[in-house]
Length: 129
Image (cartoon, rainbow, N blue to C red; front, side):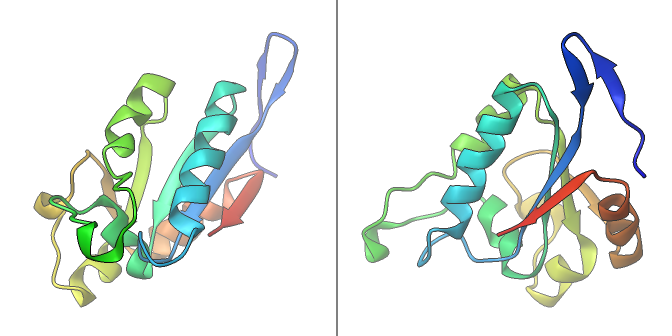
């Protein structure tokens, strides 16, 4: 069982939100971001993982005019204001898509698949989007 830390009013749980979908074309990425902000507002231990096409959620220079959706990517820069600073990106997912850490708009920890699995196993709750 993951280590739980006590905080005023109860137990602080570790939540990881796993993002696997491209940022536009479905509601998954935006819904994940909204749930993350809610969890952070309730002072839970929140982290995000980006795998598969989810790595595109963090790429710089997103232009959504062609898909007629609001570009919500600037919201990722505000996560630190909510004390959400644990962002993990799977190294293999970046490589397969020809991306590097320098292509991402926010600071992240790039980890390999084995480390990502270990991080997920440490959580109390893992939600996949």
